[in-house]
Amino acid sequence: MPARFTLYYWPIPFRAQFARYILAHAGEAWDEPDVDALLVLYQAPIQGQPVPFMAPPVLHDAEADLWLSQAVAITSYLGERFGLMPGTPEKDALTRKVLGDCLDVLHGLTLNCGAAMWEDEGWAEFAEERLPRWLEIFEALGSRHGLQSDQGTLLGTDEPGVADLACAALWVTICDTLPELEELIAQHAPKVLALSRRIGALPTIAELRADQKQRWGNLWCEGQIEESLRSVLANWQR
Image 1 (tube, rainbow, N blue to C red):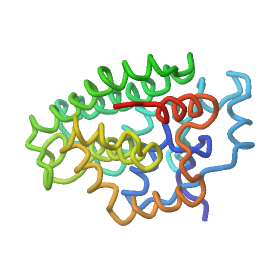
Image 2: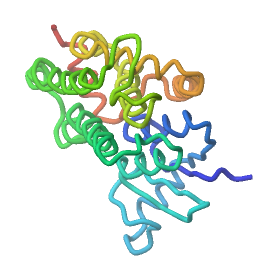
Image 3: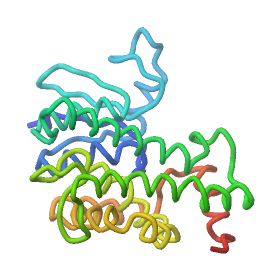
Image 4: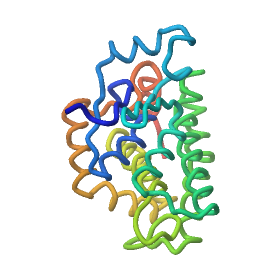
């Protein structure tokens, strides 16, 4: 029987990782077609796309006959489907704020998805100023909701939700694929990193990580963007 959900994305973690962590945590099987199937959607005229979109990820929920693009929309939708949103207007809004912050971090690390390539001087400035500030934003949010290194959640919910899964999808994946950044993350957001590691160690998430490691190795965002990032990381003097 075909899976209810189909996720279209490149064979890398990056923006689709948030949806994957939620699906895995919910115990939901999903399909990820190959690149050729994605290209059929991606290269189609806008009028012929099942949902008008600029770039993946794209999610198809066959049961609801719904197509969605945009990582925040996909992640929020899956969270609501699986009961992983906090369930109050205030904390649901904070969850979407966390999702937006996660995407902003990805865009920052890739210089707006490759609008430019990293050079050593620019990377040093980002790593010393902007990235620590982002980490401190996550850490402060968790601290305000009672997060501790050995317990708690980002928004103070009784069980891990979308915000926690998104944090893990961001920071654990970075540690898995760009380990040069792990010390910086631990320095500026120790409680968030500990939370992310707890989520990453859950059986379904750990299985996903192991499968990705086997299939993709250390790939994170691929292409020239990743090449430039790895180049400056290799030269980076903390």
